[in-house]
Image 1 (tube, rainbow, N blue to C red):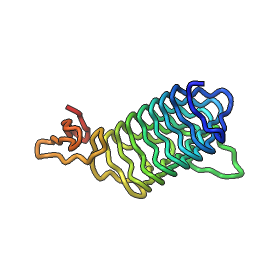
Image 2 (cartoon, helix red, strand yellow; image 1 turned 120 degrees about the vertical axis):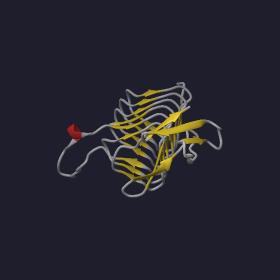
Image 3 (tube, rainbow, N blue to C red; image 1 turned 30 degrees about the vertical axis):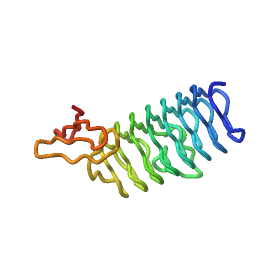
Image 4 (tube, one colour; image 1 turned 90 degrees about the vertical axis):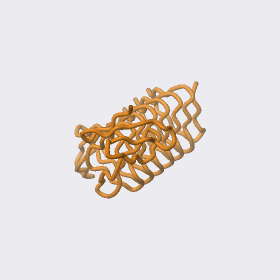
Amino acid sequence: MEYFAHETAVIDNDCSIGKDTKIWHFSHIMSHCIIGEQCNIGQNVVVSPEVILGKNVKVQNNVSIYTGVICEDDVFLGPSMVFTNVINPRSAIKRKNEYQQTLVKKGASIGANATIICGNTIGEYALIGAGTVVTKEVLPFALVVGNPSKQIGWVSEYGHRLEFNKNGIAICKESNETYQLKNNTIIKL
């Protein structure tokens, strides 16, 4: 076994778990999941059947990742955030054939206690604020907060808010990388 799993973790058959991944206390990894290398699955996490997590995905404690979710590389899922997978769930009506896909693109971060309504894509390096309820697509590098979610700005790959000058140019205060805002799209220069 090339990954670590705490003795209280439950890992079903037919899972693919990458090298150097860590799975902590009381987490349940369900059948047919694909979890990449160097991931960290916190305490009390559920990863439902057929979920796909890329390389270096960080899943904090008490996160629920339901069938239909795909997270690309370097995604951060904050404490107690949750995904949904059915738009109109009912206890007495089976809707497993109606699961919708949710895609979280490379480098995106989702804050603590956020809820991601199924069927949406969260763009590369987007930052979803704590407690946000995402009800629609999120653009790459977008900063979104609130219920329902509203874009309030843009962030760099390092997660810092970008302040654009009159020419649409901003510099990340940590990396010194330059970004351009053009037609509501961020371009890293």
